[in-house]
Length: 122
Image (cartoon, rainbow, N blue to C red; front, side):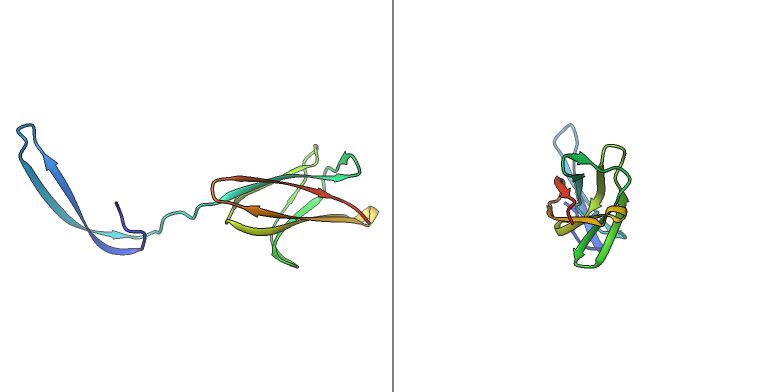
């Protein structure tokens, strides 16, 4: 097993031949990159009443007002945020011409897809 940190380390391997003789070899190894962060995904829809809303901007926030990412709803009113670091977020949507907005909390877990619905209101 490789260490979970960047830098120099020694790696030892055991070799066994068909006669059962065992030998070991050790070599230095430098890890240049850390393991990729485990991420999740957010999928959702924006609705006003019972109708989904296409073409609206949707934002992802970790703290109020600090936008981490933006996307738009598709023709079915759905959206996706991929490669999201695990944690608690708020998803917001605004329909400027009708002065309607909505927000919903969502929790992302590593390797999982979180589902959220954003309901627009005055």
